[in-house]
Image 1 (cartoon, rainbow, N blue to C red):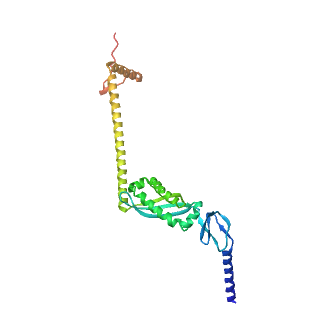
Image 2: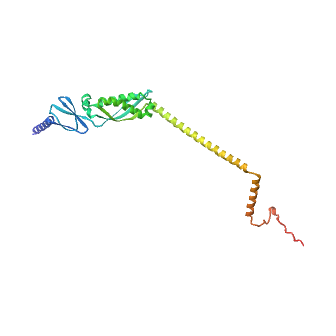
Image 3: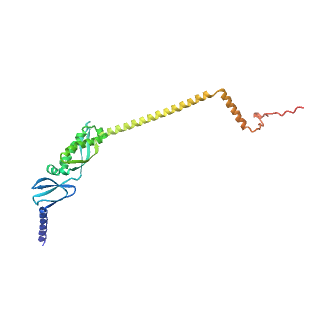
Length: 267
């Protein structure tokens, strides 16, 4: 009983395999193009997404992805000033639909391993050698564009297109990182000292301006003080004193003396 069940399963599996092999249709899914081979020889025609006829056994449909692929990696290189640089990059690329036959035939349908990885490593090393370690940091965008330019031509020859390229990070030796940190600290201290000096200069100029203004004010006042002005001020002070007097004479003077003595009237 058990042997019969196993035998039926084998027959069913064999039947499915035969149907798959003998089916006269092939499907190219979305994000792919098809390369039809006849007894192993690829056809020059590129098959779009959809259902396509093929001769069973004699022909096979091979799929080549044309959607955007992502590749990332890192490697060591030397800068212009002989600093060791470990660069991590990310690249997005795709196969040109019209070049899928060449990619299948010449690259074994493995563009990432055969072209992208070695091309990126070579371009990164070549461009890194043009810049000092500090320039790699300060001119990061320019370095990125140089790497893309170095990659674009080589990849185009194989039907590959760069969609995006990013430099994730530059990593240097510990000694270089410490030197950069020390330089940054020194520059920050220098900027602070310059700001302090500017503040001191401004404050000194403000003090000089205030002192000059006060001196000019005093000089002007001295020039305006004349005998006539003094007499005028004295008169004004006396007038103010009279305005404040209530008309009463003091009863006593200092020391208990009577200010006025009543005299008898003349006979």
